[in-house]
Image 1 (cartoon, rainbow, N blue to C red):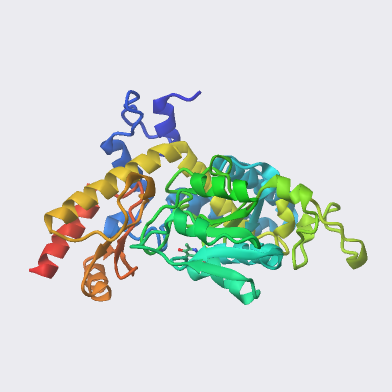
Image 2: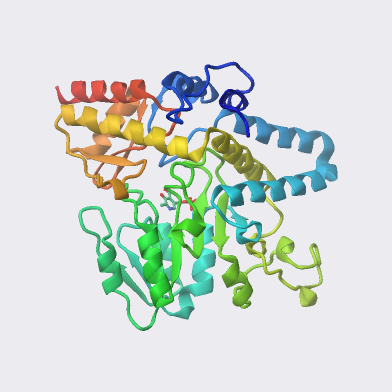
Length: 402
Ligand SMILES: Cc1ncc(COP(=O)(O)O)c(C=O)c1O
């Protein structure tokens, strides 16, 4: 087991920092602030829009540039090394979300992953989703002509009882985000999974707004299918998405096959005879064409980086920063639109504004980056943010309202 000191050293490349406060299992604020050095974006901006696009840490840039350097100097002669890298990435990511190796496929985006799931399930029976979802969650099903019920949200939340009431005899699937992009509402996946088990339904989760910010565990939450991407909380690249399919389903439901050519998902890899292709039982059969190496390598570096800090610490840090934000907004008597009950809180806080777009533009001119979403202003801090970023936001809001 690594000691606290060596952990911080690993994260920050060997510089010596003060040790952890082991008693509380928290990083001290000076240690969090040191991690800002890995995020040059912090020099110019109070960057509080990680639910939109997060900046990458230097470690991710380094890993990707190493790949391109190798490609530049050695071409495809490094092929096997790159393939090994992908399998290592799969191992690291699987462990990160509590999955098995064979349950993970690398896609290019959340939307691609959800399209694959809709292809597999849309014709199998009625599906239930809700009206808060990002379009990527629902459109692939609608476009496949799925029989769907869209549950109406209430005050930015999706009450589980409403989902339960929508279940019919013909229902096969429940679709939900873990965290809603426009309100920050975090669904109680364990409770939803209990309902799915009771009624023998698939639980499909869009985890784009939680993986990397909050602990996400496929087994603990009891989900059957999960999608996410790299360019938000995972501090990784564009063009990388992830798809989780529970192994029991992959084994049992052999007709769950991709709608496209998957060179690497064959039992006999790189078999080019069209008539003899036999798909493997692993989720990797859903990986389209040759691997997008740089993006998968970026994800690997990012998940490694996040894991060294520890996802529980990150979740706690974000909780601290969002609480600090809530208290400072209260000083200005600004209404929070996000649900604040413990069970439903996330890394996203949306507050009310009469003209969100205008305020977001005003703040951007002052190097404070937030987003207009859900009829308000969305603030989404990651662990590398600090109180100073939030103080700057509050100060600018005071002048805006003065
Ligand atoms: C919840 C959610 N799902 C999906 C997406 C889109 O992801 P991608 O571009 O990877 O398909 C977003 C982007 O904002 C999102 O917030």
